[in-house]
Each structure stands twice: as C-alpha cells, then as structure tokens.
Amino acid sequence: MRRKRSLLVAQQLSSQINFQILKQFISANDVTNIDALVQKALAYKTDPFSDRSLGTNKRIGCLFLNPSMRTRLSTQIAAQNLGMECIIFNVGQEGWALEFEDEAIMSGNTVEHVKDAAPILGKYFDILAIRTFPSLKNREDDYSELYIKQFIKYAGIPVVSLESATLHPLQSFTDIITITEELQKSKIKKPKIVLTWAPHIKPLPQCVANSFSQWVNAWGKSDFVITHPEDYELSEEFTKGATIIQDQEEALKDADFVYVKNWSTYNDYGKVYTNDPKWQLKRKRWSLTNNAKVMHCLPVRRNVELSDAILDGKMSIVTQQASNRVWAVQAVLSEILKSNG
Image 1 (spheres, rainbow, N blue to C red):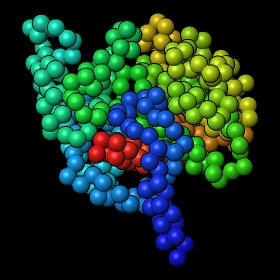
Image 2: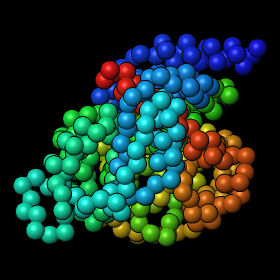
Image 3: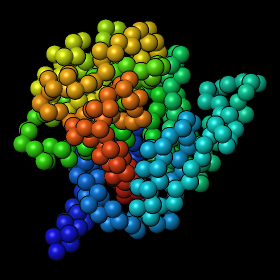
Image 4: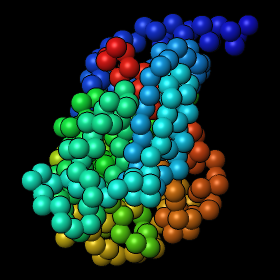
C-alpha cells in the first residue's frame, strides 16, 4: 500500500513540474529552477515509467567524439524510460572525420563539414546529444566550445551536452540531485561542500571541476569551498562565489560533502605541475570532516585519487551518484520534449 501511495505521489509530482522551457541543455545557465528539476529527477527515480508515452515516436541521436560508459548507458536507459528510440553513433570509429571551422579549406584529413552533417542529423532526430573532449593543447580553442556550438548552430533541433570541452552539465546536475537526496536524510540546512583536487597519472580537463563549481554556485544553498595546490586555479567564470583555499586540511574541516576530482592547470594550460600523494583523500584527512559523504564522477584511479578505505567505506556515495545519472538525463529529456512539443 505504501509503495502504491509513493508511486502515485511521484506521478502527480512529475506531471505538475512544468516550470521552465528547455530548448537545450549545455550548462547550468539553461535551467531556471534547479530545485524543481531535481524534484523531477527524484520523482522519476521513484517511478521511472510514469511518462512512458512522452517520447513515443521520438528519436534521440547520441554522437560520441570520445568514449563513455556511464554517460552513454544512462542516456540510453533514460530515453527508453520515456519511450524514445536512442541511436548511438561513435563518430571517430564509425564516421567521417568532421571539420568544424567555418570557411575551412578542406584539403587535410577532415572529410565532412559539420555545416553539412548537422542539418541532416536535425532531420533524423528530435534531440541531438553530443559528447566532445578538449585537446588540452590550446585553451582558447577549447574554451571557445566550437564543436558543440557548431552543432547547435546548424542542427536546428535541441542539443544536449553529454560533456563538452569545458563543462559536464549532466554530471553536475546529477551531483546536485545526489546531495539533495542525502540532505533529505539529515538535519543539515546549509551544507559545507568541498571540491578538492586529487593527484592523477596524466593531465585531465577542467570540465567536471568547472561544471560542479558552476552548478553549486547557481544552486546557492551551500558554503562552497574549492581546495587545490598552487597553480591549479580554475577559471573565475565558474568559481566566482566559492571560497578558494590551498590548504586541503583547512578546507576539509567540518565539511558535509567532499567531491574529489583531478584537473590539469588552467593558466599554463593542460599541464601537470605536481602529483603530491598528500592530496589523495585518505581516512586521516577525511576524519577532519563532519562525517562527510565522499563523491567522485568516476572512473576513479584507486589509491591515486582516492584510497580503497574511502571508496569502499560508508562515507562513499559514488555508486549512488553514478546511478542517479539516469534520473538526471530523464528529467532533462522530459522537459525538452515538453518544451518542443
């Protein structure tokens, strides 16, 4: 009886949350009411098939310019939950090399221009989802977000970012969902959230760190602290509003949530200046927190970024976090479908 009641509440909630028009989903700036979108996602978690007919006779095309596991699978499952057909295309392995620069003289390795490809995809699909990756060689090029902007310009249909050169909005929306879910179990009113840099064996992009910072700041319901070694500053475009501390121990004090992620340098772009193992989160430093829940976007380098003791401990919510990816995508796709009829 209780199960039936909760499903009924979820169905009512899902149908009532018509709060914004989503024409695309590229960053936190596309969402006018984060809390409402979170509740939409949590309603779908309670009843995944409440809007099964919403996507009937609709298609989403997912273009991957770099590999994925969680992003790909969660998007497929979310689309199917809404009754959509999901078609995956691995551009690098299965298609022509694409050119993105306008007025390019295509005498090199690129075979097809996005200006020609994107409009066709716009005819094939109702929603286009794109996953790109930065070169980490030229900051100006990466931060221009040329690839995803060209698809938006030429496709003529809603575009969803499955990760871009600078942001990973579905991951960050998932993170806010997971934090909200945990807060509902606690008495914490305004959590202290810490984003901490971690060591890694190679340079990684700033996408997840940028995006998490942008979403937490836009959400505006926490004391937000970023901690990293010297020279690992992120762009102020995304971090403005956060407290930035280069002493990890000081940053971790009384934290309620700790998000662990590596990123390469922003100013001297794409470099690794340090791999100090002291920045790996272990139990000793975690003990400075307020029994904080520990988050990571995955995949994670065990005993490099995070210790086994943390990842396998009760403080880790990385599995919960990853499973919530489905409900994040489903909420976004649902609102796009409703907004675009």
